[in-house]
Image (tube, rainbow, N blue to C red; front, top):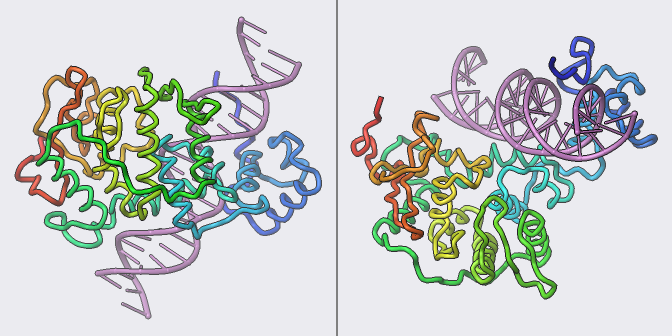
Length: 325
DNA sequence: AAATTTCACAACCGCCGCCGG
DNA sequence: TCCGGCGGCGGTTGTGAAATT
């Protein structure tokens, strides 16, 4: 027996809201509140709408102090920072941006930010091969550099000074704490456990990891955020020096950490590997998606090993890696 | 100028967790 | 403790506008 629908779909209006409907809903809620029951609300007002639809309309559009469009660089940075930290938890991200709705941020990410960071517009700008475009080429360069210097861990190099505003810093820190870490009274990280990992992280490692994370986000124009991540030394979950790409690989190969929307990294062939496949994890990316290519296992005896990572557009990957059918 | 493609965003869908009976 | 209803959430779709061919 399935769940009863929240409303009779045959007797409710769907699609765009008319100004009259908006006015009805808005004036009623402003005068009476929602009454704690969205399902009953449309009947009270005389709207032929699903309660959920009313709720969505109110929250995303009619509610006071809603901002639409015009995301600032600062907001971009916050969104990216939080997305990297917690994934596609839009409601949490929205809570950090007054006046923004989760739907707005989600749309903004999907239509603009993601492309901005990963250069999907390359399709518009030329053929597949031999074209290096903005952030994609930056990531590619970084990866090529890593390929030439395959020995990890790298020495820790502190990033640029923090340019994040204090409010953002504090707010994001608090959020990260809420999501799994914690600070002691004197504001030092203590006994932090990654929210999705079984591994406790020692104080100094986590502090450095967090510090680097904040730094690389805050110090960079948005187009360079992921470029920096490819090169910025971070600390992995075992407290070893690593970098952002390695973090991703680590996450993926151990798949203890949910990808949370980062799948597009593979879909768009941002990272491609075919060369190093030894004992693997259980994830069978290739079978899951014909455009997804498997990562090498990179954890070996507790130490990171460099997987060779290639990026489409910088190498003749069709020649090197003919697609298997 | 018309046709086609791409983009942006509003709205919908369905799952999940919480809460009260 | 169980169960059903509701709210909340994230993913996806639909549609109109803008850009491109």
